[in-house]
Length: 475
Image (cartoon, rainbow, N blue to C red; front, side):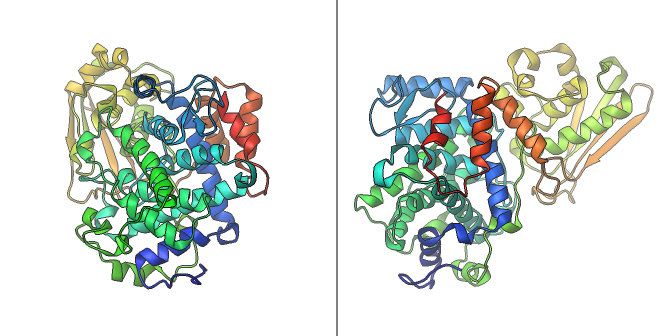
């Protein structure tokens, strides 16, 4: 499938460098194109919504302090748009960083298997880069689509280098590990790098990789996605200026293998090099209906089923009728938070999301605000909630389940279980529901720009200038 005219696929590094440099629209199946366009639309929506968050405002204020933001579009030829920020711009690497932060600021972005958030590190990098490529270098919408899929593919492949990667992570946050590699590969493809120069971009990116899971549930976690977008892009730019890294970065224990104890590049190459489809062809994506950690979607769906057995939709739950709540979840310390003290801890708390869904019959962005978290009725439910991690409940988005058991004051036990929440790759959102999410997240836009952006994303296989498409992000 991939040309090997320049570098034989004798190692993981040569293989992935060739893939990134030589991929074309012909390599993308109709399924890959359809799925990746859905991912791009969703990511634009959550990024535009994320521009309103406190995290985004803090990062943008820092950028102002550093003198790296501009008030008007086109201040210099090397600035790129901050999505949803009324035409403000920043130098392309800073724009990639801020837009990447915004995408993950509410934990509302797509999730893959093995676990990562694939779009956040890639889309901000190539969009920022595309805005600065003018004249003979201006990319087409097809070029952007191919580069985006290269970034997704590199992440999908590198996630398959290890059995460790299949579990809910507990050491490194995957977007900061594979995401920076995907950003570098996508940027290299958009810039038209040779396999050799792509190889150096990946090597440089590996030195920017890594972020600890200890910062999950804090305002720092969204920075991981922004960092991956920025430094992958900068790795490609540095390679373009002649910097070099280790030629075998993806084949060494002291290279990319530093992130995975069971990294085996020889077996990895043997297992995957003959595959003729992009990973996305066979592994669909999960789109989030709620702005929270993906594991919470099992908990919320199970709770809503239980709630519907207790009271009809739209009816108030009488909390005094609830004696206790018991939740069965996979074992994962960073999403077991009995009494979250911030909105970001709440997004990573099984207990909070179950109690919120039970009390309100919905979970929306406002559910995580301070005023909602401090409600007496909610805290009363949290105080009588327990969590158990049965041995058979695997900590993997592919195999986990969540059960919710609500014991009422009269002794009645109401139970529900979720194995695949709506939005999971086994139970994907319909196109109508995905578009509805986008329209809700971008409701501050006029409908015509919304419609144009949706239509542009779904017609990216056409070889047309990307300039009109990119201008839509200036609102």
